[in-house]
Amino acid sequence: MVPMSGGAVASIPEGLLDGGAWFRVEAAATASAVRRTAERLAVEIGMPERKTADLSIVAAEVAGNLVKHADQGVLLLRTVRAAGQAGVEIIAVDSGPGMADLARSFGDGHSTAGTLGIGLGSISRQSDWCDMHSVPGKGTVVAAQVWPDGPPEPAWAAGVTRPLTGEPVSGDAFALRDADGRRQILMSDGLGHGGLAAAASHEAVRVFLEAPADQPSGIVELLHRKLNHTRGAALAVAELDAEAGVVRYAGLGNISGTVFAPGGARRGMVSLPGIAGHQRRQIRQYDYPLEPGSAVVMHSDGVVDRWNPADYPGLLTHSPVVLAATVLRDAGVRRDDAGVIVARLP
Image 1 (tube, rainbow, N blue to C red):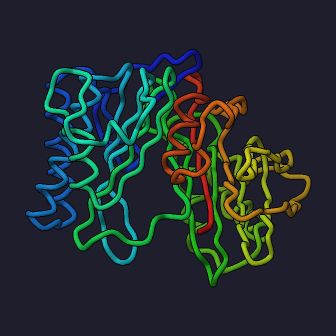
Image 2 (cartoon, helix red, strand yellow):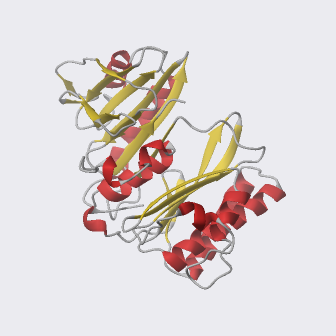
Image 3 (cartoon, rainbow, N blue to C red):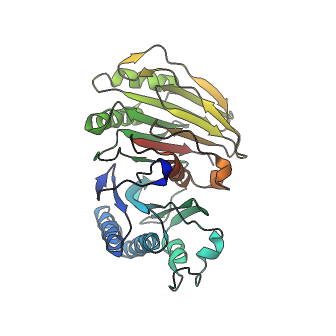
């Protein structure tokens, strides 16, 4: 996605990055490459032919819409896993012009480019799950998934990362888990950039996913011990407890965490100074109120904390992946790796 301040988009080489293929979509030839890559991913995960055909249509329509309608359109293809199966997810992001009436745009026959007007409706029909948010003047984010055996329950958390311009890999990484009923998310920013930063964050993800069920402060303490052979990372862990109505949060270094109430009110969460794996003064856990429907947003310092939910009507009610991609597009900076993870409990 490589969004930058000011709305510009850096040049994105095609290739596999962070488990997905990124494309800057400006020409019909790129749209064809997107479709072929989607079909290849489907074959790799053993998707049935019928569902592969559905995925091919979705990929072609999403990429085609970027070519025909979007400014600075970029697209991510990646595999997703849930409920014992693997699917393919397409995330498309642009910086304008946006749509004022999404419901009308989804209707067959509506077109702004002289075509038959079946693109968005086809995306909705052929995908197993899709979500979209658009604001006139700011742009549109579309996320769609195709699964071999039908859609699992919608994800309660999702994230997106992108590397510093010119780097092949991102030093930022995220993860989510449900450990004995503890729903927890991790955001990690490996020190520096490039392969060594990515290795530190990938190790943080591995340790996080394999750790015994514990509160966030215990997980961060474990991560600090286990990352001592890496470059180190800024990282934070949040646990969403709907029954208790709290978010439990512990962090080291420049990870920003915010709880957004359904009405848009925001409350920042505290990360303490330090580098997991190398230096820390203390690890402390803080609890914050979690109203029903609230969204927890965590991001690295490659994303500036300047976006205002009031500028994005209805965004806080959309899926975590659409929310994360929107924040990355408009608040991500070019001069650093950037990553966002968003969680909202059902």
